[in-house]
Amino acid sequence: MLFKSATLCDYATNTQGDIRIANGVITEIAPNLVPQKGEEILDCSGLVLLPSLIDLNVSLSDKSLNTKNLLSLIESAHRGGVGSIALLPDCQPRIDSEETIELIHSMCALHKINLFPIASAIRSDGNLSELSILNKKGCKAIFVDSHLDGNLMRRACEYALFLQIPLFCRCDDPTLRGNGAMNDSYLSAEMGLPAIPSLSEVKEVAKMSEVAVFMGNTLRFCALSSERSLTIIDRCREENPHIFSECSIHHLVLTEELCKDYNTAAKILPPLKGDETRQKLLQSLQKGRIHTLTSLHSPSTITRKDLAFEEAAFGIDALHDYFSLLYTFLVKPKILTLSEVSRYCSLHPAQILNIHKGILAVGADADIILVDTHATTSPKGALSPYSGQQLFGEVAASFVGGICCYKRETSIKRL
Image 1 (cartoon, rainbow, N blue to C red):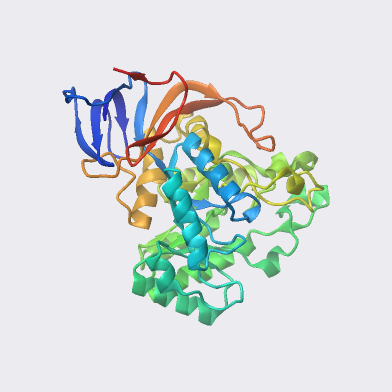
Image 2 (cartoon, rainbow, N blue to C red):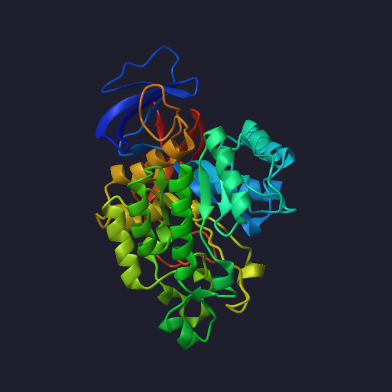
């Protein structure tokens, strides 16, 4: 298949050219490639061709692992420009057995997508999972909660070192968070809601950073929301450069003010912070202190969201609009270039998972998206915190392994 006259953009380049893919990989990149006999040719004039996005922090609807939720997830990923997903294991059933991994792999085979299950360090019974077996079955990382028992944490770190795979860590002290529903601030007090202090995250980041330094693990922090957390990581990266931070697009765009009027669409975890924190996170992103971005896709059904704020579930449905959110709030206002977005959302996640994706290069996997930066769209979710806003940039087509998984009608012409 030959893609003609596209703007080719990844972390290192942004130029006009053609790209050829065959047998699931990129085989040629050059200006004015000559079509081969019988080759399918796509006219990509006016479109930008990028590596597919890779999201390392995705959960299923209501944290329920079943065929229906997997199908919904895959459809949203294709439309949002995401070709690879790290699926977090804190669902029901938990990703701690061969059976759950086989279900995920069967969906990948039927519907072209890269779903990488992340192994839960512990089983539902509280004992250590069979991590070597889960790794052989395709788990490319081990997930730990920062408050995990110290001995189990040490053993999980040792397994990750032995298997040469990263640890994914969510930092939260449940004894500090308690029944908190939003950020601890004047607003939470004014609304009369139980609150979650930033210390619940920050002190756990400090602990886990020291664990990573001592043990020597590759460690990726999931969805951080405090600039203080980044400062701690900066210090520890001087001794272990394989410690990585992640931030969601929402914590760069939205603030806790959206929680006013008890708007449960804004109830996400970690909670949205004030504008001063948001600005500091944006500055940290521009300075390279944040290494990956995420949609933080963790949808909850309306029956769990349309409740009193304290009782409503945490979560956000954002994968469907992920590229549009990145383009609207980071590229269009010139906070980042499209190449920089590709660095944080494709290259770095691919490097952490050690997969040959996230770049436009001969020999790389042909996971690519075509986007129309002039198109406009609006959030599809009824409970989206972006409801009523106009978003810019839309995925015109998505390819995984060179196979078209999604194509917007009349968006691409065949020659």
